[in-house]
Length: 218
Image 1 (tube, rainbow, N blue to C red):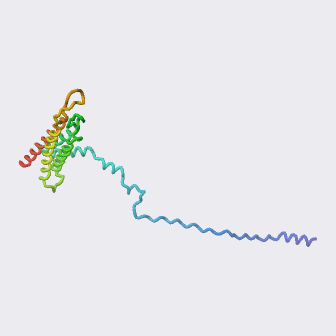
Image 2: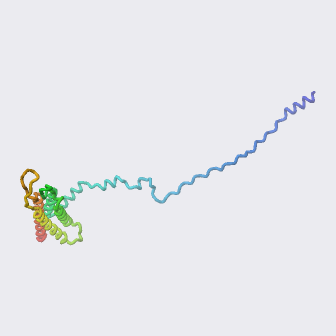
Image 3: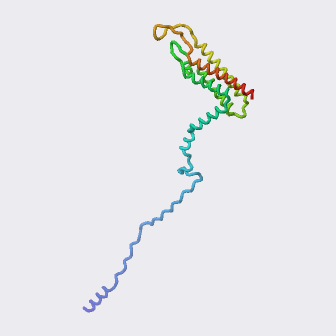
């Protein structure tokens, strides 16, 4: 009995054999590759506001300052002689007269100058003002001074003739029944606008001759 008890105590005192770990059969994952930084482009960054044009500046530059326009007009009038001013204002009178009736007809009533043959006088008067401005401001230094003078004279004389012809063509003394009442009226007659335009064209012509005279005296 003593031998059996000793053998049992020796077996209990022996350490248990270490268990071996189970083999790891899962596949190993490789570490993710480091993200490469994008190569810097040679051009400017499209998201950088420093390289983009400022739309507000472009809009502000497109708007003309009224003070500059007023100063340009003062400089233009200051560069004109007395004859040039008379011709310029006379041509301006022709342009303004085109916005009032130039002809009165029994069928259509009043006709504005811009809505009739008076539009030709409007264009001629505008050409007179442009030629005076080009000559007074020396817009084209290499241009012969005779060219704007000739242009001013030709357009001014043509404007006078145009107004006279318009008065002649608009006069139709045939009596027709008036649309209002039982009276009669002329079929067509020139209105007060064409006479204002004619006076302005004559003033522009006088101013052109005064300008030529002052130029010859100088």
